[in-house]
Image (cartoon, rainbow, N blue to C red; front, side, top):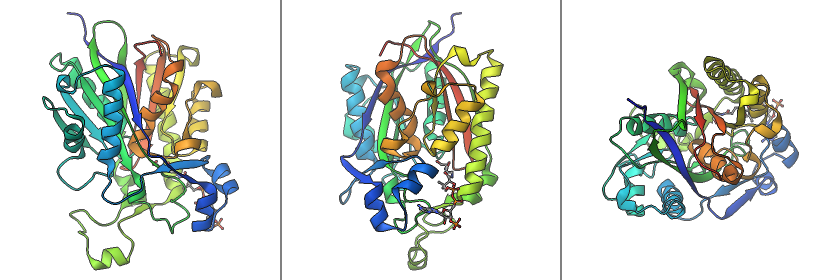
Length: 331
Ligand code: UT7
């Protein structure tokens, strides 16, 4: 029997208008444009301003853009998976809210939290549904209002993150395009270095947790940095070796956008020239589960049918992994 593969057939995005520059950040905390550019590589990031506006607004924006670009009726969608660490609320799932806002009525939807690897894990999950042959149009959306959990008095974390959303359409094909192979990993012991201390069932919100600023991102930068460099690069190289792919075979590395130095190290380990590494961290910062679809959206016009892409991530959990896919259309 011919194998059914899951191919990306469209990309959409939504970015809030407000641009938070390094110069504005320098007025909020003791930092400089020079420090942020040399140590992280971010020039500006987008912020969703205004009361009562959550990740679902960004996600719905990306999904509506995707439906329009791919000329798809919302009622034809079978499944929507939303990757996020900043859900609108603890429950119901933000994916449910996005589906409602986008008019998706004949599908089921759910959230998946795998930190900055959320989109990669959601793409891997959606691939299984499509390969089963029972799901024809599946949307994977990464949507994050990171500004809702960033402490803008903490100079070590506040320059890093930004808000935004990206979405892809996944459809079956019997041709040799789409998701070809994947390697995904988690190590929960890494949770001590990157987490949100309060607001979950182990430590519900209280006056004390708010006073202690425990509803913001807690990150120990250096251990996360070290683990990100080694794991993202190791997994990407392992996936290439497993599939007999050399640097010449790869059109682009699509790496999580957390730090320019992590991205450079991963590209170098894979022997890729810098023009084969997708980058937009300078414009949008680290949008957690939205970085990968925002890269695909940014580079869509340059992509050609048959291009080999390696998508690679590292994030809270720890979670990490790589997916090899063959791009299915000319941009
Ligand atoms: O996406 C999820 C996964 N997350 C990541 O991949 C993030 C991984 N980690 C990193 O990207 C980096 O560790 C950071 C960007 C978070 C920090 O960069 P670093 O080069 O590891 O800096 P550091 O934490 O070692 O701090 C070096 C110095 C310290 O000063 P002293 O102790 O040497 O005097 C910090 O206080 O830089 C200082 N510093 C700053 N200075 C100016 C920290 N943040 C800032 C800042 N501006 N914003």
